[in-house]
Image 1 (cartoon, one colour):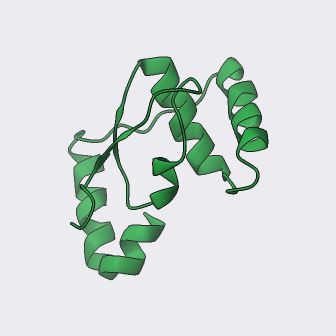
Image 2: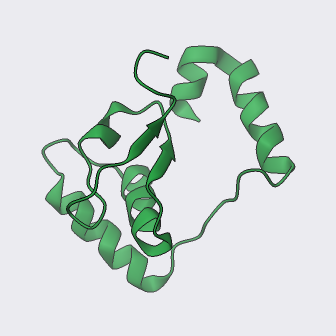
Image 3: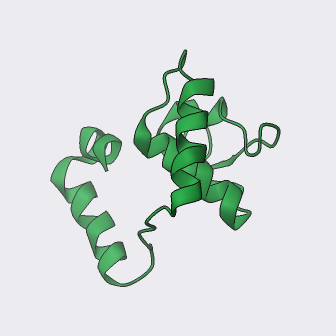
Length: 95
């Protein structure tokens, strides 16, 4: 939401809120074991640095077996799922 606001201001954020309201995007609340993993990831990527939001998305991808990530955050090109797999980033580079 932050990066979208930087790029498209409120109109971009408003469009994202509309997708959330329609159920096209779900909001996930981490479980206890995911919080531990988020902490581990933030420690591992402290030189990037990884924030709580990024750590929660990587942990969620691991739990749900997801590779595709919609993000404008270039750090997701560095992060690895389960320490090995890369993310398929949408939108693609240069878009």
